[in-house]
Image (cartoon, rainbow over all chains, first blue to last red; front, side, top):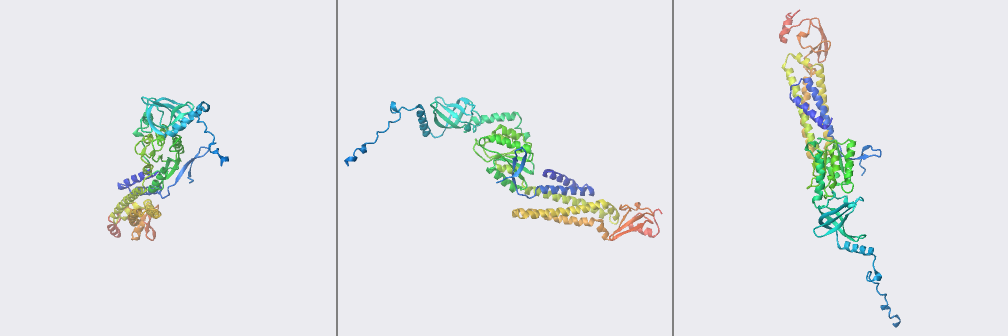
Length: 70
Length: 457
């Protein structure tokens, strides 16, 4: 799932839970899924140093991303 | 002294001035070369204004034409290397400005203006080229507003088409790093000015398309003179951008003019930095959004659980009904829920610590402020879950009756005389057999049973 999809699903889950019309089992299942989506969204925002890589075309025409050598 | 006399006056007579006499007549080549030297020495490159006539584009790539006004004309040549910097071919009758060096075409003996730049003063030549391109693009629908696509909110990979040596890449990197360091930048190097720029830009866009790994593309360069930016008005570049399957942000650093690339791109940014701001979201804003959803997820679930608990405690003495509701599956779910909460809270804490040494103090305060109340809520919720657990209830002296197949038995109607069943207590279980049953308020029913009255034995 992309960040957008995770957040969108999370929003839908929260909206449904906030409706407060759910049986407990369903609410808890939604909560578990919400936690999973939350984890995905947060992982997408994880810390990392901005890397600048370069798209390189090799002789056989295949494409790869390589670290810049400079 | 007399022996040396005469030497003072014995110097050879000065050579005759070339061309002074028939004997010293000049070759024509010498003459026109001399004229060329004199002319070129006398004129620095100058801007002139005139009308194009007799325009010819030679197949060797050079342009030959004349510039004229009402009373005079001068032959002009524009070498191939300079032609490449011109926006488009001029047509006869067009008024242009030209930067040229006055010289002599020695072979023909003609006065000649060697034109280095044409039409750079914002006159009709550029507009003509631009209008031709725009008309074709418009006819193909490539300038339609509906074609513009929204940018992804959090791209994983941003492809950057620019010069590896330019300031643009540096600026984009700096902004991306500040806003959301997890975004990966992939440079697709291309010339951004000079001969062959358009071809390299087109090739870079094609590489990105073939690669398929980019979520959004930035194409651009820092500001420059209009001739330097001209490749960004190239129709081929515009079409390559239109054909890109992911959104493209143009970032041609200039303030006054809009390039064709700007019109075709999904988003136009005034500078490479602005393009990076558009492409890369502010991580802290996204974190705030996720934190808010986190809070709502926890509080809404807590409310659902709380409501359930009120339902259970509302039943009061008829605890068995609540126990049935919470039996087996839901009980397991509640436990899993508590564990997920705890794991989640720990994960959030770890992330907070990972951030601490990287962020400015103001930002450090943010996750703490957001997470602290969250954790309080989690602890409270964990406590509530504990209170809800049937096992905790057993600790308070209650018991749960369960059928031999593990179903909680919550109603007198579920018991038939002679039927064995289990009684679950805080410290173990007892197997029992039904001898009598009585419905009604529990305390009244017990009294009735003591008196020997049962429902249907």
